Length: 244
Ligand SMILES: [Zn+2]
Image (cartoon, rainbow, N blue to C red; front, side, top):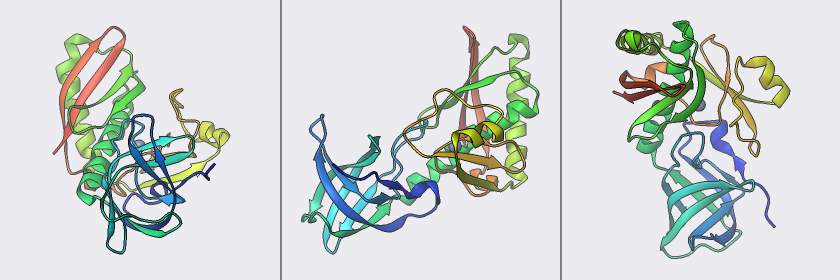
């Protein structure tokens, strides 16, 4: 039917405007309208990170992007024409909402910094899940935290994350093969998406980890982080956090 969308946000988390070719228009199962492009800077929801918002324009015509999803190799830019219409085959301009992207970039990266802090503190917790939404972000691990030490560890993790932020560590990402991934990373989660290019991300000189989300280029941009709550029960530890 259509070619797979090239995922430009994988190469540059900061690009908020770019061009693309409008290939097709699809009605989703839920009755929504989705535009398919040859390439995109819009982040489709996934890996615990929310989708981008923005607009797709061509001259005076505007398609408002209200939701972005990834399906069968393609990015679905879901929304509606709010001004005029755009003909298939046209070159369009993509505009990503910069404030929302910036927050997601920072909030998502903060979750990774908790992983590094956990490792630096020598805690035996295995990453299991991340939820990097504005309403109650958390990272979840397999393994328990001693109840008596919870409060102390909460302060220690928070201090370590803020230290990593203040160290202004560079962050780099690159696409790799599945075999390279196993060499580069301590831990390869089984929830890794197999229908997208595999990318690893590296914070400073710490061991890389697989991730397809958008990140800051330097940990300094995260600003600051507060651990809200730690819940450790039924074999899992959930660390809730917010960026400040
Ligand atoms: Zn990430």
